[in-house]
Each structure stands twice: as structure tokens, then as C-alpha cells.
Image 1 (cartoon, rainbow, N blue to C red):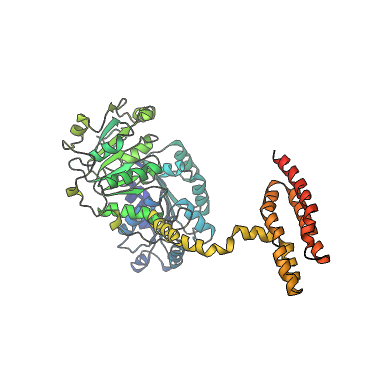
Image 2: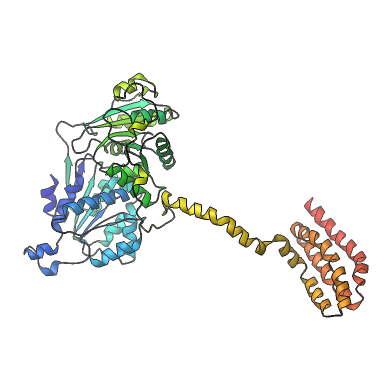
Length: 532
């Protein structure tokens, strides 16, 4: 339905259920409109029409979707040798800038990095003839609307704009009215598929206790005919925790969430696509547009936020006509939220059945063999696992750049280097030495003066001089900590003390100690009273 309208150059709003092929719906017309050297050779275009700047721009909300759309367009444009580049955060700038300098026909990117490179004048948007906003409602939910508007304002006024999404809230319609010219709204539905969910996906909803959920999930993952499985969590911490628990139970699992570096996220998705990992635990960052063949089960470990998120989560299975199973585990606290989702989608699961890992109906409905436990038998642990997939060095940027895999060795290196660093630093930062040099600066001058006199006097001064710092050393830090006035009087007492030995014999400092001591006691009393 979309192809003839889009090929004519008309603006399009495309709406269809997730898993029905929207990527090629906008991708094929876009690839046809791009002018490449093959068109000049075939006589379909003039040489002056060729340009090294991007001729088409596709804006997507997530990095994973950006990578997937790029791969699909590269495959579709292989015959005409169309150059497609993915631009998204978490990767080094240099390879992306180099590719843009060499020349690119189609750019697929996330709003943040696109704005960044356009602001640095590394990305030229003056020759863009076609703009596509994919998963537009998700970009609005993530707060990308201001960035998207800035990008649209950088584009030429005369262009084709296509907007695609599975759901079409009011804000997306408002965006279309502002930036599109007489768009054609195409809504594709099958005649026998009236509901908002895909008919090929069987849905099961259970009321489950949070402490029993890991055991339930472990048994569900051993169901008959289970292929690849995706488990969705609401928080990043839960996703990391469940992935770790499943790994301990013997499953080949990986995680995709925002706390991981881009290298680790791509490693987990590659391992999942290649079959080295058969369970992917993720947050809603992987709920949009991710298309992996062979996903038979989707498990909502935590209830989704709203009906749109539910539709996109379960849309990872039952794609392109295949059958799938969607299981939702609703905690007691989430029952009100789930009832709103159920009402909006008219699912018929208003009061989910209370279910535990040992419930007979769980085994019957999901085809779990009798006697299945929460640990995968060793004979069935045939997957290579996440470690078999290498982590690609992306030159990651930003605070969360380092992946979990790369953080570990750095911590180990720091731990190994710490004792050596401490040994090297110990002589330089002895606290006693520092205190002594600060408080006894005049005494060093006195010692230097006495060494210039006769050897006998120097020896006598060396014996007599330590008496003053030994008494003053433990007191001076206390005075300085307690009150400034005490420290000032202490420095006055020390400044008057060296004047006596210069004028009289070496025995004079011992005689001067008597008037000095009451002075110090008087300064300590106000300090103590101030503390009190």
C-alpha cells in the first residue's frame, strides 16, 4: 500500500502492527529516489545530480534499531551500491566523520548524535530530499521531540517526509500537521485481524509473586518447542539481576540495558542473533523494531508501563506470519496498572489467575514437561554462551562508555597496582613529618644557626633543642584543630622562644620554659572552654 504513494513523492503517514515490514515500506522508495553512479551509467540521471552529501535521512529512537535499519537498507541497496551509514552515540566520532567525508547516500541515526555532528558541520543536511521518522511515538516518549524539530529545521523546505509508527498518539499527529504537506495516512490491517495485537501470538497472563518469578521463568524456558526467548524488565537493575540468575541456573543468557556500554549491548544482540545465546534479558530499549528470526517466547517479567509498551514487547515474536507465545507475569502491586492495559486493548485478562512455579495449569498451558525443575540439566546446555561472542572495540565515548566486559580488567589492574602505589607514596606522605615541619619552622633555622658555632655548643644545642619540639609537637596540632586563637598564641610563643638562645648560653632555653608554660596553659583553657 505504501510503495506507489511513496514513490510518487507524496508525504506519507504509515501505521501498521509491529512485525509487518514497515522498514522496507519506507526503505525501498527511499533507495529508489537516491541518485547513485549506477543511475548515471544507465542514463537515468545527469552527472551534475551526483553528490557526496546525504540525500536521505532516517531518524530512529534507539541505537539497536538504528543498526538494524542500516543492515536492512544495506541488504536492499546492494545491487545499486547505495552507501548507508549508521550514526549513533556510544561509538567513536572519528570513523563516522571519515565515512561522511568519503561520501554517503543515506544516513540512519539517533537524534543526539545527528544534532552533534550537524552542529560541528561534519554532517551536511542541505541535500536531503527525503526524511523518515521511524517509531515516531517512541521518540516523543523519550523526549526527543525538541531534537527532532531542530533536525527538521536544518533540512531543505522542499522534501518528502514519511512518518511510520505502530501507534499514532495525538502528539505525533500534531508533528505531522506542522512539518508535512498534505500527507496520505495509510493504515494497514488484515481483514480477519481486528484487534491491536497480532493474531498469531498466543497470550497468557498470570498473577505471580516476585520471589517466585525466577523459578517460574526457569521452568517456562524449558517448555517444549521453545526457540529463542526475550525477557522484558522495567528497570536496568532487574534486567542485570535476572540475566545473572539465569546464567547461574545453566541458561545461555545475555543482557541489553542502558547501564551497559555500547560494545556489550551489541555483543549480546549479536550473540542472540547468531544463536550463541538463546535468552535475552532486556529493558524496553530493545522493545522497538528489533527483528530476530526464531523468537518463539516473549516473557514480560514485570508488567509494562502502558498498552503501547505491551504491544511493542510482544511484537518481538509472531513476526512475518510466524507463531509466538507471549507470557506476562503480573505482581500483586501491578494489578491496577495491568487492568488499565487490559481495558485499553480489550484482552480479556482482567483478573489474572494466581500462579506459582508448581501450579499444574502452568505446566499444561505452556507445554512444560512434568517434573521440570528451575535448573537446566547439564545435557541440555549446548549453547556457546555470551563469552563466545567477541566484544567489538567501538572507541566508546561518554560516562557509560565502558562495557561491563571492559570494566572488569581495569578494576583488576587497579587492585594489583594499588599496593605498589601505596609503598611508593608512603615515605612522601608521613603525617608526623608534615606536622613537625609546619609547627617547627623556626627551630630548623635555630638548628642551622647553632651548627655554624663551635662544635661543643652545637652538640649542647642538639641535646637541648629537641626538648621544646617534643613537648610542642603533640600540643600544636590539637591547638590548631580546636581554635585559631590558640594556634596564633602558640606561634607567638614559638617565635619568642628562639630569641633567648641567640642572646644567652645554651642553658637559657630551659630557664625560659617556666614563663612559657603558663602562657601555653592559659591559651589551652579558652580552647577547652570553646570546645565545651
